[in-house]
Image (cartoon, rainbow, N blue to C red; front, side):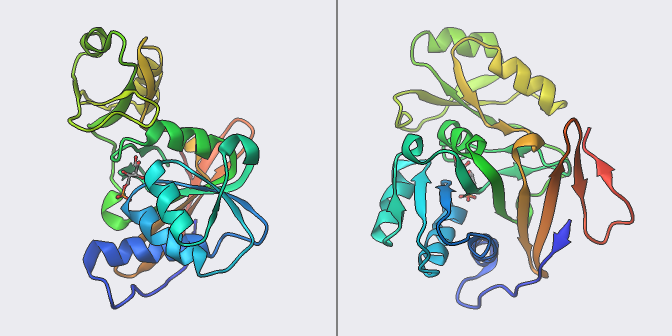
Length: 245
Ligand code: 5RP
């Protein structure tokens, strides 16, 4: 893991300032002429102006109508993912980040599109304030469910409930799984194998390349190194390297 240290901006306080610091650090990773995936949420809301301020010639794919609108208002060029992919880089927030690089995403219910965009990018960068870094993932894990048979799908999942939010832009229902997340890989496989689950919010470390976590002391840059069969998390300042599986 490498480490950059950037002071939090004075105009914002607390968590918002940290989100902005992580977003600013991520905006600086983007190069001219790149094709960029834009995530969804309040951390990404800080990324968009930081990116626009760089005046780069970039083309972007958005993961939600809200991000698309905000990005266009700032003058960023938004194209269809299918016209842009593969992407050079995608940047997005997260709800939980564990030490191995597993993520829980979907607090805003956008995880299906976010996962498609992240998977289409050569480099997926996660931005977050420090409280998102957790020792182990826990519930809830967001779900997107097909409307057809949704109650049957929920019953098959067990500890899962519909979220009281509008449907996804693709017409599906947003729900949350509240059961234990002891083994994220096993749970991800189970959720993916449940008919009616369009997508779940568990993102494996294999998808993730960089994690920028802003705390009071600055922005910590964790690099998830991808080997052919093995992935490692390298932590700055740590005495050794830690296998994530
Ligand atoms: C939306 C997401 C967001 O990236 C996640 O919920 C983090 O949100 P925020 O940046 O507002 O803390 O997955 O579906």
